[in-house]
Image (cartoon, rainbow, N blue to C red):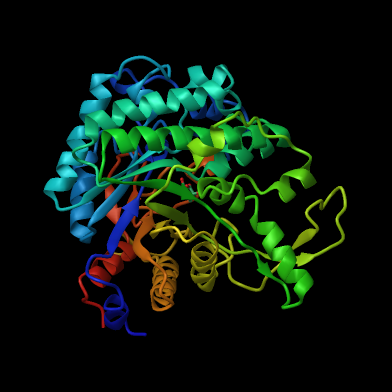
Length: 449
Ligand code: FCB
């Protein structure tokens, strides 16, 4: 498909956007009374981050926000998804809002609107105030209540400027990488804790939805997850059933309770975990959402195996033949169409957005001082084609958000992995658009052959 016809496969009101997050991009961690987050503490642990770095630099966006808005305007996007850093609003996770933090986000949102770009705010993209982390973090039910209070402060302050609200980003990562495998802050390794955190994150989401409905009626509000339904290694009924079982932890565990179906009991029974659910919690969690945001990067493959202590789910991952990004993630554009179809077919949310999609590549080819990132261009183009397929299939897909505008701090990988459409020099902070930036800009303008 030529790019002009690809562009015209999307309706006029489709959102074309970029995504970012506070801890990965802002830098200036000591500014404006910001308190420490669990990620500041985690990064200081020897061995936690591949290059021993932290978000102290990020993309230097806290200082260079005007340049970022100009870059977004130059791209021609009509929305920008950013997250608010909770520790910039409540240094210790409770009490009145810090005016310096609120004013900074207000200024940024106003500048975006002036440039014709709709701000999308994620309230929680993993930077929990450390003070709450030390009181148990998401293992504590109280954190869900604190999250609702923080949501109240932010939505009262920015409610008139924000087009859409996202409560949580990828809560599976917060719960399972934060408390299960220890790859993310706070670095615990305990599966039962991962499930306890799951429930408190979902409770926080539901309580925050109630606050948003009261404070910003009529504005869109929903959640962003990183669902997965690994492809079956063969069309056999056994492998297809394994594919469905393997989808639960990343998908049904979140979307079932959000859509009023309670938790997937079969999965929980098999794990022998008991969630800390109190009377009324499931009703809170089932508050209707306007959309489900899907972050999609890759699709794995599974086959059925006999359940064993090592493989209690009765499935095992199989190596595929696709090319991989520098993260080691398989490049499977058709998997994006499939996961959107799976979610639509199973839960029927009113709207779907691809809230993150992009690729990390070594970016070693430089011409005329610019990164010629042809891998990233073909990654984006093939995934945008996958979005066109989803629309053709009648799915209510309403936007595509590229991850990410800028190179930034990639969590436990530090600065060793780059997803940006724009390169950032860590010594000077200078921003240099890559070829992928020019490609996205020309694609959006309908200028590609
Ligand atoms: C997602 C995260 C985002 C970024 C990308 C590469 O899981 O939401 O912050 O790190 O992966």
